Structures are given as structure tokens and as C-alpha cells.
Image 1: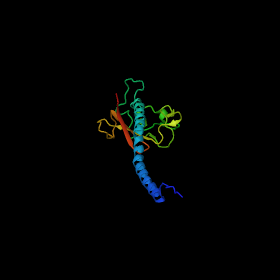
Image 2: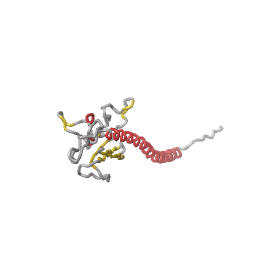
Image 3: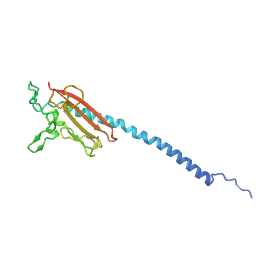
Image 4: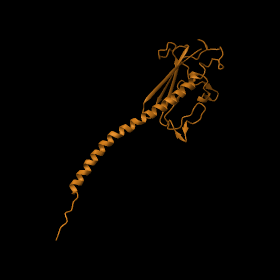
Length: 187
């Protein structure tokens, strides 16, 4: 009888091949996963920039102080009528504390927060910031501080002054803090 010469892999060769393939796949994945994480950072940074710029525009568009003329006239707060340096924040109202929709001057935003609640952020009119039902800012947090800084050194003057520093800190879902700030003056 004539015996056919069979060709193939032995069991040991197959096990060694699986082990080598597993090691190569593990190395490949360990190099790929950090790149995926880093690739989302620019998206978070762009969204944080959009949100930060939007809030800067919203806050800067408000009156300098509660005692300022809201129509752009000549009435400005002076050293005695401006909000006290240690009393900035949302104004008290008959029904509790003023909400963002009612903020009418810059210092109302002091202490304003939009926590990481995995909910939907709203704009100043209370409209949800979503696209096709997708929450654009899930996992982001926002913290705002406002204080007098007439000498423009970034430190609270702890006295009434002619300039206020607005600082917005936006924390992205990957815990990166992005800081935005601007000054408004009593003009």
C-alpha cells in the first residue's frame, strides 16, 4: 500500500502559535488603548472652550454691579454703592435665592456651579445644550468666581474697586481643568 504523506501542525506548534499571538495582541492593545484615551482630549478641550467662552460672554454682558444703570447710562456704582467685596453672589429674593435666569449683574455669578451630575446643562434661558438629544457636556463641571481686582494681579483686593475678575474653571470628564478669565470694569 501506498501511504499518503500528511502535512499539518502538531499540537505543540499550535499552542506555541496561540501563545505568541496572545503576547503580540496584548502588546498591540496596550499601545492602542492610551492613544484612544488621548484622542478624546481634544474633543473635551473644544467643548470646554465653547462652554467657557459662552459663559464669559454671558457674564460679561451683564451690568457691572447691582447699583449700575442697566440701560448703559451714566449711573455707576461708586465706593459706597457697589456690592461689598465679601457679599458677592446671587441676590436674595422673596422666593429664595436668585437663579441664573434672573442674574442681572456680574457678581451674581460668584459661586455659581454646574456640577457633574451627568445631566443636561442649560444656557442662560434654561434651554438644554443638546444636539439630537445627545448631551454635549456630560461629565463636565463648571465653577465661577468673581471678585474685585483693581490692580489686575489676579488676587482678591478684599475691597470695593473699579474692576472685577471673572474666573471660570471647567473640569472635563477626564479631570483636566481648563481656566478662562476676563476683567470687567466699572465704566
